Length: 548
Image (cartoon, rainbow, N blue to C red; front, side):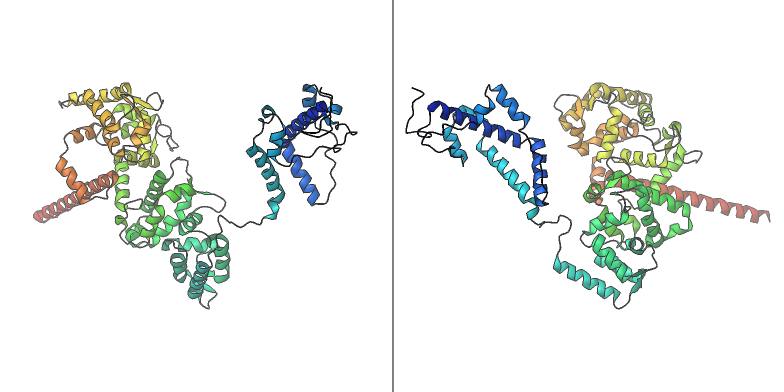
């Protein structure tokens, strides 16, 4: 029955066995061909062939059938001659079967279980991928991510350049300052740095050299990108500590609020270092001496620099540049540095905040658990290390500070602060309160209060994410475990005074309030000391007059 011919169905006049065998074989070959076409080596081969055809070269890479086909045919028990043999040529049908032009036709002619290996979307994707490779070079580039040209803006920029330069080919720094502020949108203290970047000198600059530099480096950038580009070294994609020194030198020479420091070069250097360290503390989250474009873009440094060029009172710029804040940091360090070698030992450091820090905390800091010291002397804290510490200690609402103190309390470094670790640090403070005849605070009450505020998933298991979500609570939590003076001050605080401080200075951070109070205290002490010397001098003169 199977050997009889029939006039209906697939291929009239063909023997049924040969037609079924042919259809199954063709379906199998198509399936294997699609799989072969998706292999990485096949993709590479196709690319090479297309390249050779475009260049007019002859390529004989394909000389024999791929071994993949041979293996598949052997496994299926089908000979190569039988697989590729045509149906009976003596029949009245066509010599070769009609080619399947669509997925739908192929789907109708083959069994469903054999067509499940590839879906229609997969076949379409393979076809589109081949077409994309063929047409890739035919489509010209129409989008430039970093070079979007605004013709109107370009005309306005050229107008500013022509107005400032006028008919002169060279201009000095006083006239070039308008280029820095009006055209580049930068702080005026970048003028000399920009001139140096253009021609290597800050005396005079030519119009031709600036236009060339402007078109190549700055024209297609936003003001914030221009600021980042001028600060960093040309070969780097980040800002390092030394990159800020030229700017700070210009600032100390030209800013009216810093003129009084020109007579003391040593204090100028300390002020510049302090400002740069504060900038890196806030911007360089990885603490690797590299401020990337992402760090710079997400910070407020550019806005602060813009204010710096307009504000003559340096102390009104509390972030980074305040001289009063520098004075507080420097005096705090100087009080601890007994031998004034600009390094403090563990014993010197323990006197901070009138011995407020517990000995366990001091040991953890000098074991360099929260942060490795930058000091070149073993077991000594440098001025840079102290700046980082005091910023973390006096403002526990920043991510840097939370990470710093979290590492100190997390004894096993597993990312979780447990009740055992909290009790380990609180035990020393409780003993000191007993020695001072101060009523101790129940540890259980504190833990319950922190659980209510931080909402950990498991009781007494605090993670870093809990503190990030509740920044205002972090100071209370860490002060309770690390600083006796702050713990007692929090328990004896006057809520009305706290509210008044917030009302008087609503935009002050915890660091701003600390620096303000400390500066007032230091100023009063210095004033009293000067008055005492005057009074003492008056007494001396009076004694001499009485002797005469």
